[in-house]
Length: 380
Image (cartoon, rainbow, N blue to C red; front, side, top):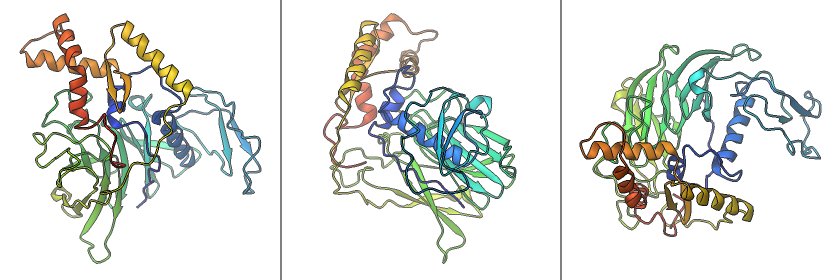
């Protein structure tokens, strides 16, 4: 059983990510850029990155590890690109680089898990199973398209666990997303797959949680071999109690879904019976550390994007004190929901757009939960 830990703590919330899904220009300091670099580094280490062959700068002899960082830093000035980005490697050797299946092109990779000769690559679009028995030429065995952030993966015996916390992730893995504020179709939590036949994974269970699963860790109790335990942590807004009973967003409420993790007990022989058995409040009382915020250059660039979008009639909301431009995908889903709510059909009307604009900040605030634009009391 192998699971790669997620060590990057994004300053930008999941709601910002969801709201800004279709932005065409993203600051280099945002979580997306930093996290993507981490994902690509992990993929290179596992020899199954999302990029095709590209020029590689190696520092030092591959056969002799060096404890001294290379100078000058070879990462400075690297060329950008989708398939031909420049790379710099230190104390590693790139064995191979493979493009993902077509449905995963343009997506973001998240985490890696390993079992036997297989590497399982989590992605915001699902997961891929690679045969790495020949590291110089990995081959895709299967891919499971299931859009959701962030699809961190872990394996225990014949069971594959996949995290999900995206507000638009569906139980049926459909690409259409979820536009309703409360929906029985939404999945936020853990998906469980039986990979006894790794080429034909079967979804055998799902466990819903109030904030979803941003990442997770699988643990085994040596005194309890009949079960495996999944510890999950969610970073998204608390879902409505109308969608999942017991979900409380208010941080001052003793039953709040904030400041805690979830422990899921999974019977190995009957994973469909998986359920939450504990919700320890390990973050209660912690305070959020100081933040340096955006650099002056990034702040100016973001304000230009906001001003440009406002002039073009874009939809803008304030999240954690900063104005953000909503991507067209998010706006489209909200408009479609308005059409459905009034019993209409076809394309949204100008009146629908006006209604959405008048209520846009309220909608975003409701999704984020109470106090989203107020100082946050803790790290979660």
